[in-house]
Length: 455
Image (cartoon, rainbow, N blue to C red; front, side, top):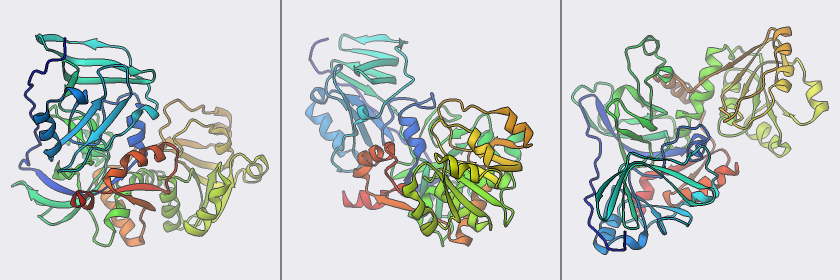
């Protein structure tokens, strides 16, 4: 196609604040392990490319004309992904907010799976461009990506919109629609994992919007209007008031943000499966973003709590800092044998594939094992110990709006927050790399507002 540049019209749009919506200025946004699962497509439904931001373009950096590149850098809405050349190189990602300098995100180090070779729905625009409904490209071995609704011009590939991420959001209301009664300007609010559902089905009528077949996720999802949801890596977002939560004044906004995903993910099953009876024995498998909050909930409910982990180095922190009563190394046969039949409940927060058989052995008669970690491959479930002990194995996925508000109020009453590492926006690359190595205690939270002020 040659190296000549042909101007392309680019239009960036934001959602309008409709009658039932509130506009939220984002103050803090947690970095959830779900974000990493999504980036790596471990659950199989990621809409690539996925980058931090609201509106995106992708192209060869040497193909952009100076005037357009300057406009991009100055645009408060611009979030752009660059490929050094059209093919045969590693992918880097760059974002801008106001005059913030670009910060590359090297996805080549995060293994991407589940993408198939496909090009579909393309048609000629002119001599310089091809338009694709879906375009697959391999930039180097291991870097497979699919881009939707994009235009390839010379060595530049443009895409609008793309997909962002993050769903543990705390901010303040800056605008309300005429039908909004729940909130007023200046209110502290939270937005969690879901921003839409049908509101009319039997499931929604039970305040279980998180199980609605038409549930809309806060990012990596398509709204009822056909718009991609973009998550909380932004300075502002517009949300239907029904899915916005009142954030208690006594909860710190930064350390409270992860409660909107990690908190409700463990609170909901503990309530539903009756894992709240004081004096009972709870096992918590995994001491990460979910597990450390499960320990805190367990103690608040008056339970005896044992952390079950493969890492001995976490014992002191589990007991001395988080308040667990005991610590069990799951790879120690002697310790596991001694603990058999001692636990009433187990909540399994591990997202990696692992055996359930040893955990079932820890349960008493009528014991309950609930898994919330969402591994990307099936887990084996041995039936004999399940039947012979009349034990229950269950699952759970976040919680509805009403229950999430209940959880936030419970946390405010019992002073429960996440243990966090507060970061600036320009640290997100390193944060994602560290998250992939489980190198965080226990959640990264982005200081969005102050990051933008410093720019």
